[in-house]
Image (cartoon, rainbow, N blue to C red):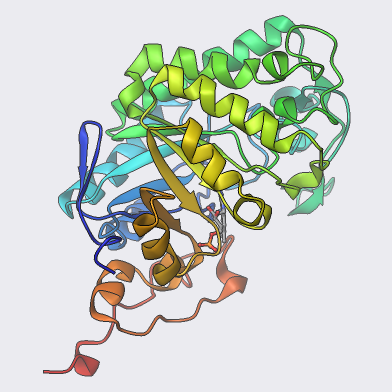
Length: 364
Ligand SMILES: Cc1cc2nc3c(=O)[nH]c(=O)nc-3n(C[C@H](O)[C@H](O)[C@H](O)COP(=O)(O)O)c2cc1C
């Protein structure tokens, strides 16, 4: 495990090891802002070389789930500041995952009950919002409206402001969420995005334009060395249609990000990304820091680093039940199993009550 546990220089951020805590929405932010439990949760997991926060909505429009902690109001920025301080006190590093869900939302969450927005007016995905009687629950996302050019500029501006807010809240940087079927991927996908304007699906250049304009704006605001992008080639989450252009699309994006010299690309490598060879091809085109994530064991991650296929490896589920995940890897201690029913919502249970490996079991 020596490769995975070795130190790494991520631009201006020295990391103690190459283990990244993957972004995980936990839906426990009662009034849409981080709280004391959020600070405890992340501080407990600060042994990761880098933490990527749960998805952080950049605007009310960009919110698709109740109880997710945003970063567009002053009180939310102050709330996140307590979290970043708690992580720093434990010697950790944390970036904010900036999130606009696009069509994966519901009118009950949108300002003035308006429709959510997307590349096109085609519904898809599941939101966590309010039923007509006011009770919260999972429900089909509302039919979105296609953003016009003015609306697109407003979204880009929201990303910029959220990045500035993240720095004001003490984050080490930001990760632009362009994965898992949310707004930016709703533009990248050529089957869904049938627009005919300069953000349309007909060419690689136009359907990548929203992502790249967001990156340029955020780079301009906080410096490219503090900006990461998360991508999920072959993703079908949130009803994203499969398409034959996946490799071509993501290699084009690799080249475009290479020119922009951002801090890292975070690839969800589950499923076909590895088996199709796209990971290796991506690596040849993107020479900056690469984080791989998705169903990895520590052993597999260590091997990927040794084989030169990735620099860092992100783990989601293992971090939920193992706040001391890195120590468990270091010592070969067994991993605790996770209670999936407590992934989303609720309080401290299944959130901040997972113990570290018991000292009584550590051989003397
Ligand atoms: C409870 C939960 C919440 C998640 N929330 C997010 C999220 O907010 N943003 C994101 O990009 N991925 C999210 N993911 C995906 C993870 O970042 C990761 O890619 C996935 O869990 C696969 O990695 P693993 O097998 O190590 O868990 C979430 C996963 C889980 C289990």
